[in-house]
Length: 248
Image (cartoon, rainbow, N blue to C red):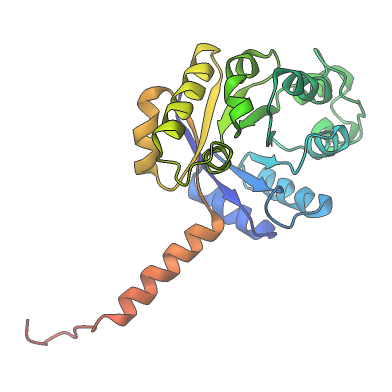
């Protein structure tokens, strides 16, 4: 599969989405699990993504039917569901997010359906094109990762190494046990022919996992990008500025 890269968005500003859309990323993920987003703000973020031609997914705060339905109705390109620990939970997520093989509630009025302009058949078809990704981030989830990845209607698995390391009683994502679990999850996704997502700090880190089959990378966040850029400016200002004509 083609490697794709995007970033988390943790700042409740549609302008951030506009900027990212102009930068050429493959997607952005609004982090409604760990950042302060309500439904109205997520609606604006998704709208901005459409205007900027940037697919906007949402990491939802939970897997409740109402949460998943409202997120997909406003036209999100997909949902990243945290803490999926079992194949039964994955199957329930499919039931709540899919029309053809699930029981997602239908309305032709929301954005995903073109505000009624698409017609029922086309709206159902487009609705089922949204990505549904399960985040694997616990010992129980690792044990079930092959079954979760193989669940019909699930488009991919996403490895949450930070919470996974905590679940395993490790202090670092680089601990051998966490690395082994990461490799197992990647292999499960590859075997199922699904997307294999990861959070990484840089594309250099992504390059170490891509040969194993990981292909969908969230690289940092809008906050880390802003912080790194600001730190580079601050570091440059702290250095003596050589003027033209100064001795070498």
